[in-house]
Image 1 (tube, rainbow, N blue to C red):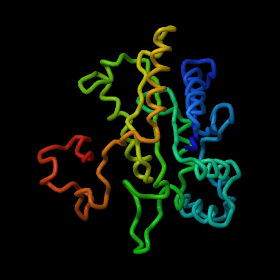
Image 2: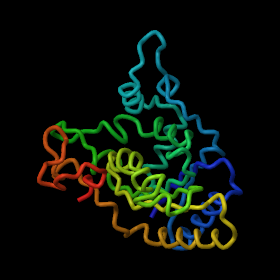
Image 3: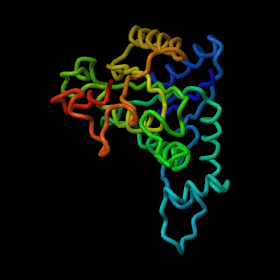
Image 4: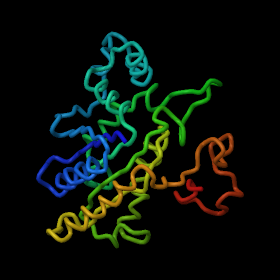
Amino acid sequence: MNVLWVFAHPEPRSLNGALRDHGTATLRRHGHRVRHSDLYAMRWNPVAGPGDVAHDPSEPLRLGPATEHARATGALAPDIRAEHAKLDWADALVLQFPLWWHGMPAILKGWFDRVFVQGYAFGVHDDDDRARRYGDGGLTGHRALVVTTAGARATGLGPRGVHGDAEDILFPLLHGTLFYSGMDVLPPLVITGADRAGPAEHARAAARLDRRLTALPTAEPIPYRPERGGGYDDDLVLRPDLAPGRTDLAVHRT
């Protein structure tokens, strides 16, 4: 497989940096090819704006249509086009970051804001002009694995933990971004207790990462309901006979 590893941590000598290096070696040892987007090392600009599309400042900016037009005409900013080339090459995407304030670092959010543009990752349509999203989309055919570290203990990120369940915390990324754009989203790997991890914990984290990367080509994705054929009505609400009485995020799983 071709794997794009997007890394969003400011310190390469951290646990995250060690896991990234270890995981890259594991993938290559299994015959996979790896490219990197190390966002802090690249000094990635996270702010989407008129500079992405060579916008005429005398006109109002509608960023979605403007990025779609710029991509179609080859006018997108060079750093965005470089990331598109990596994604086009990749079969799988590994996203690695520390969990900050129940989300990803701003630099990674800005990578999505600028790279997952209209007409590329979303805003694509089929031959009947129906939007392709939630299980279909511009990145259909790609696999995605999220690897994140958290200072919290594992119990605090469980289903009854005070922080909330880890997959619920990551739902906007897993479902609302990756699955929305058509990717097969694998269950995330959450490394807890990262702030207090010593050599033994580092070794266990590396072993867990090895298992997930070895299974990357064949692991079962999270069984999210697709928009089409998933049981949603015309208002995109799940039919009442499916998961009756439930209103939590689990209703979006088949």
